[in-house]
Length: 307
Image (cartoon, rainbow, N blue to C red; front, side, top):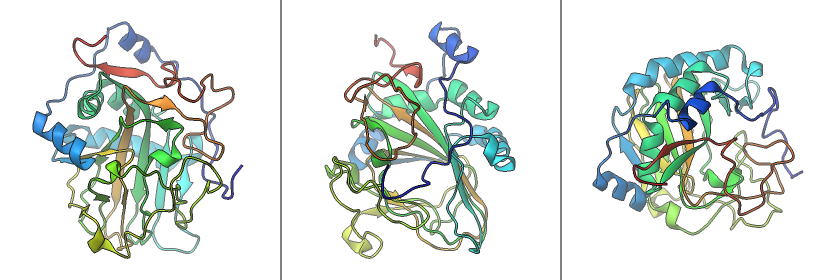
């Protein structure tokens, strides 16, 4: 399929989410709450491709930690678990995604938190459509850098209106927190995706990618890099096109995070020839340029007054 294998570890099959909670949202019986975001904050996100919101989801930290523990206790019972530390290395870098229909705490957050409203407003979209969630953990002793990358090269989606709502579930020092290149979502480039285990490019034979990621870590003074220490509950919004990564500084205390990914009005299906995230079962029922299927990716928020 491509020149790298093992990117997606298949465990529980990916299926259409059929949940009474989604039926209740479609029927108007459940309405996710609104997030209060200022015009200045929306403008900052649109300009920079990244926005920090202190303490925005502190009230969700404990439930999301509990959900993540379910994932960690039995990774094979959930979708796409990945270990990105080599055998014999200290620590652990684990992530897993597409489990929001399977883990009650994740489902509760998706349905009842302010995340959908926040995402839709930040994108200047008339609606917010859930793409998936993604959870991460780095245990103490880990010195595995997350390579500089964009998220959109991994996805079967195109468009400018795609945002991650990233919630810190632990305090994180600035040297181990995620770092972002401000304004990189406006570079007009889609770089080859990276394998997190070793930083290698993959899908290099596929059309639609611009080039390999520049050596940002080797020339940091050439870029407008922003990073901040985080408290549990602090939230970062960033575009699917924003370049981000971490250093290989040793993680001194557990660092967990929970991210939901959202699509806006201009999101369209993009068929990829190589491996993608998430890999969908065949047939997908979409052609390149089609809106993303609402039965797979539920619309959870609509701007008041929007049809």
